[in-house]
Length: 526
Ligand SMILES: Cc1cc2nc3c(=O)[nH]c(=O)nc-3n(C[C@H](O)[C@H](O)[C@H](O)COP(=O)(O)OP(=O)(O)OC[C@H]3O[C@@H](n4cnc5c(N)ncnc54)[C@H](O)[C@@H]3O)c2cc1C
Ligand SMILES: *[C@@H]1O[C@H](CO)[C@@H](O)[C@H](O)[C@H]1NC(C)=O
Ligand SMILES: *[C@@H]1O[C@H](CO)[C@@H](O)[C@H](O)[C@H]1NC(C)=O
Ligand SMILES: *[C@@H]1O[C@H](CO)[C@@H](O)[C@H](O)[C@H]1NC(C)=O
Ligand SMILES: *[C@@H]1O[C@H](CO)[C@@H](O)[C@H](O)[C@H]1NC(C)=O
Ligand SMILES: *[C@@H]1O[C@H](CO)[C@@H](O)[C@H](O)[C@H]1NC(C)=O
Image (cartoon, rainbow, N blue to C red):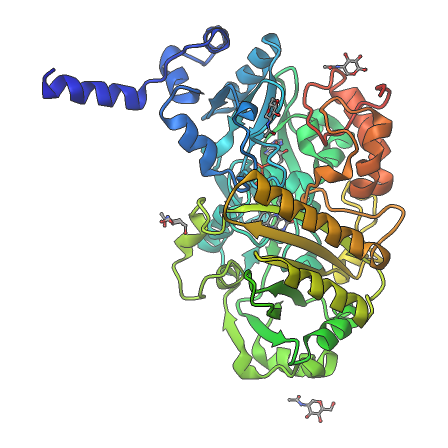
């Protein structure tokens, strides 16, 4: 064979995707019957499992590679460029009896955007990611496939005094994040990301596109933190920006046990939710990720103002920490985004656009809400458990209070407001993906969660929907009855769960959009 022929074959195999299975053939055929989908565009949009790009695309945004079971992968991946291709995908999937999963940022804790035990197609919104900012009314239309980093970057290129109060990790997608709540360094000042959604485009199970007006206020209420994925596919959100000062201050103060970490954290619990709302101090308590039995706590803070205001404020509110000007760094708000993402403030802002993260690894997480300070002995018991792990394990404690206390529990489905001192997330991460490692670390996490029971919220033991945890349900399947689902539904949504199920029943009566923890139909049977 000549070189040219070999070259051509390599070239062809890298771009072309064989349509080998019957389902793949039928799906393509169906798509071609839809308006606006032609045979040229379809090749760009559909990836069959034999495409050379398929594994790469599947894994690129898969933030938690904890699952090794290849039989749970999508039959097809679709990467639409326009809304009409999403509409057609929904209609064709329905016609062929396939489920649809949507992936925006791929940061789902249980992999629900890219895994399923039932045959499904995955819609990857990586190309649906435009952002349009309108400074005259301080809003932005952001497409669901954009990341938090892309949004923050775009805002900073448009204005030095605007920001958005969403999560800390730049590679998180807006599609999932806003559908579950979304909080970060500005939650004490501005509440959560979903509090700032003013309109949205949503495609329903019939392929129809709605805006706020046509979906109605009930559905618009439900998708802001109440699992939008149970109602349809979000194409874009309209969000209200917030103003930020030109200069903010960040600091990281590390303490070991010998330096009094436990006493400081114990004290922090009484005061962090009552600080001035411009001041956010979270605590990361972690082991060293090995067998060295060392523990450190980091007080990681953002203050919406300059050092000159911060120092007297800290002297008044938390003198025990001994904060000095030399511990603090003044920067712009967008630099503080880099700072919290683990970069240096001088690093190029373009780092925020990188969708491939360096900290991707298998993990298991759970969370709690804390309403009463935990006694020192209780904290010490948790540190002891962290030191029993031979891989990175940590507690992330994020203070509430401020604006969070002023928003009612039923304003949007995210109910965790007044009365919570802080949210506590437990996380364990490991590098070597094996079934044995997964089992061991997940088991450790369950022990820690059991240990924390007396110290955290009760009836319900509340949880945050964006820190999804399938252990909260008894039988995990995707056709859950209302009463089965109430077990986790009340934890995530408290008194809002029933209303979510009522809205779901009306808007998606055939339960087309479903997964192991989607909002159930009200009158379904076990
Ligand atoms: C490293 C890391 C850091 C994090 N940091 C924070 C943080 O600081 N604050 C915080 O609040 N949370 C944080 N999270 C949690 C994060 O908010 C949730 O995991 C969120 O749901 C991720 O959204 P996504 O679009 O990236 O995920 P995906 O996996 O793409 O989606 C998550 C869920 O939403 C559905 N979905 C996605 N897109 C759409 C859409 N367009 N329409 C309908 N449904 C859709 C998916 O099907 C899936 O069920 C973090 C997660 C990770 C892994
Ligand atoms: C993988 O999935 C198949 C089919 O659902 C199941 O039979 C098998 O037990 C799974 N394997 C693991 C390791 O979970
Ligand atoms: C920006 O917002 C203003 C005020 O609401 C509105 O008049 C204008 O049309 C918007 N611009 C765009 C491009 O949407
Ligand atoms: C801290 O507060 C004490 C008493 O409240 C005061 O004497 C001292 O000057 C303050 N220090 C700073 C740096 O503000
Ligand atoms: C994005 O980050 C990853 C992980 O740190 C790195 O390997 C990659 O080179 C980065 N990509 C770009 C374009 O900077
Ligand atoms: C869901 O469960 C109900 C009750 O068991 C059943 O009638 C229905 O057919 C199920 N739907 C699917 C799609 O499995």
